[in-house]
Image (cartoon, rainbow, N blue to C red; front, side):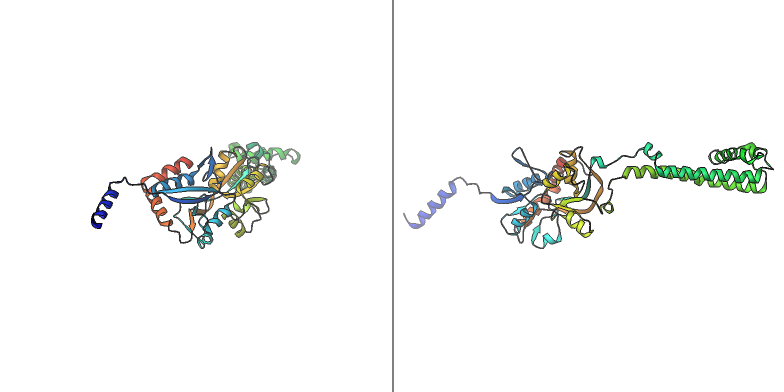
Length: 354
């Protein structure tokens, strides 16, 4: 057999052999427990980011090995050093992280919120509002003004209107009653002032009664509002001088630093929530979806998330700088957003978007 015939037979034999499957690319993924984005459930990796990563890996043929670490800082540091191919959880896209690592396109829009102990959140009470000192003060002032107004009308009308024709010691209550009816009901038709000064003063009282009624309504509303927020926090401006907790190195910690708000920095989510449940820390500032998931699950009846999100931020998957995985990941992510796969995963964990 000639050499040429040998090679022809060898190539023909190779073409007849069954094709062997290519080995999937192994990808080491760092993560940290942050419900509802990444968490172990029944020995399996669960959460929004884990489901998203699982679908991207399927499309790209990646064999992902999840490495669950103890702290958020460790998760990022190992990626920066190249010890892991990527990190996935609820990682906020920031300029400082982008300077040393590469981010994917945003995978989730988030923000910060404030969480209080349930017992520190009071509901508005009509009875409490009616028994408030502010309302008592307003009523007292109104009584004095009505009494003074009625007695002035007695001075103007005691010789012109028979209703006011009585001595001083007997005039104070009828005069007060006349002024009260004027403010509330518009006065008595048969007791119209007859003197020039009395008529002018009566018109002023009628006009001023509109403001008096408005003041009473405003006072009751204000008292109920104060009762509703008494002892609670509704905005960032209410955090000064209070014990606030967040996680060390988080975007929430950076925000509090910029606002010069003192806070207790915890090494991780579990420690912060443990301290919160024990009542040592009564206020927490952290990522809105994490806090909302907590109050719906383990923290039901313990925590209450206040107000709207602030400091809008975006989460992404982080890679070592210059990683060749960024582009295929972004391409797969865009495909998922276009074909509805992303929306399906989103609704599984967060429901319909508001």
